[in-house]
Length: 415
Image (cartoon, rainbow, N blue to C red):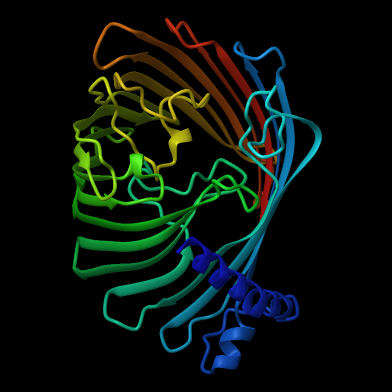
């Protein structure tokens, strides 16, 4: 099955991607509606995303620190809409620069800590979408899928190689504030890139996400994810409900709140037997440029395994040092606090954001102290299409896990 997928996407790459790339470099970009197929091709849009990053990792389990400079260039083309159809194609490549003292997961430098941004050249996205049905959009092909806050399904956008899905997705809003979102996906294109044996997972997975906007209060979402992937130990069926909203307390103060519960069991080829819960509650406020939030998240464990989210954007949760990409068998609780402050129009700079996180981790069962983490971010937009950020994370104080600190300096330009 996996070989068939590779052959299929290889043919698309050689027979469609390269000719279309050549075409897009020579076409003008306009905002006119397409009346013919030729106009749909000529009036399309080109996109470019260049990201340059330096990452440093100090890990007590390694004698050497990791020091990694990488660049990622992503480029694509979207046709204008014609008779309800629209096509999009995007390639990307990632390359390590100097310094390159890091374990990219494929470069054989196992004496260094991991920085999971390996060299890669691949077709990142290729989709055909149709919006000719009332209140319905259909997208087929290699695509980016982000559901809710990415806790279960996401694109891992922080890493240089993002996660995409070969899938058929149908979204419908025929019933006003009620939205139906169904996806069938047959391949996961992971962050480990085009040269890694772990770069792709075959899948036979169904994602159903239904949400309803309650005007003035928030959005309630019910979901069912039947995840069957090549790594059978991660296959599971998860059903949950989520509520997230915001409400003005005064002219200058907005209260925010969220709560979520899910249950997870074995599914498909997973031979284990388990019944695990997920729980989240958080509250916060926005006022005078500040955003604050406190929360509690629990991923249950049973001593043999923990609640898993194999298709999530894991970097966004439980600390930026990525100590808990795999949930411990004892489970994990995360008592967390967040605050940021945004300053707009600082001279020639469009926006400055300063943010901090604190996490206190403990085992769900047993008495193990899983440590604490503090994270900091400073992000600026020096001009409209550019962003510059510095981020620091430090994990410490665990009973059994080594201390870790990480630093990132990132420049990104989007067109």
